[in-house]
Length: 206
Image (cartoon, rainbow, N blue to C red; front, side):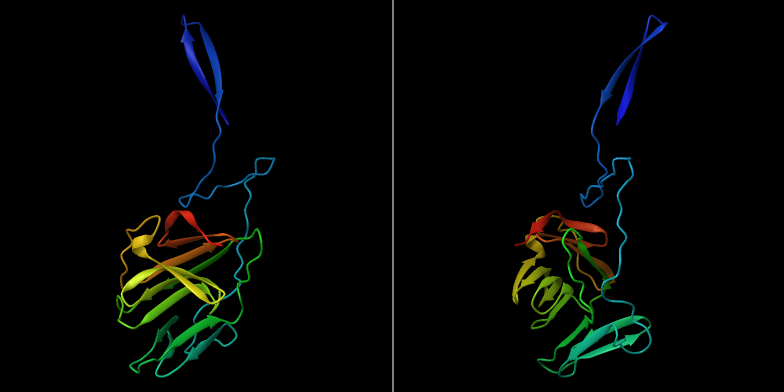
């Protein structure tokens, strides 16, 4: 990319000085775009690997499966799924997709969901949502009254409270519906809420 600087000399002639500089297309998350040798921007179509809509009055067994104990329930209505443990102590509820969003090298995966919590936390209560199985993956959590992000590796969980984020800490957990996203590669993971990324630099996970 270049530009031309023009200066008028003696009102008759122009002195042209050409200067060049490098430029990149970078989005709000710090991700750079790439181009082909012909100047075409490289793009990649997104495909849904797992998940889907909540339709009808029950979970679609071809898309979702649930594991409920005690008085836990998973109720579908008005294209919304509400997961609750009920009032019995030690009740648990889990809903996950039938298919797995298997990671393929050089193709970063993305989790995106609109989530609302009914309160800002309860003692001895834990909630998690994200791209995770019971043994591996990345997620958001609300444990007691602590909000944060975490990951599982071979069944071992590592939690990072919001106070320890290495990026934006301005999000205030609320009972509204918020858009939660997770982008992950082989060694990096990015978390974003309502299109605001934190951290601007990824957590490095190995």
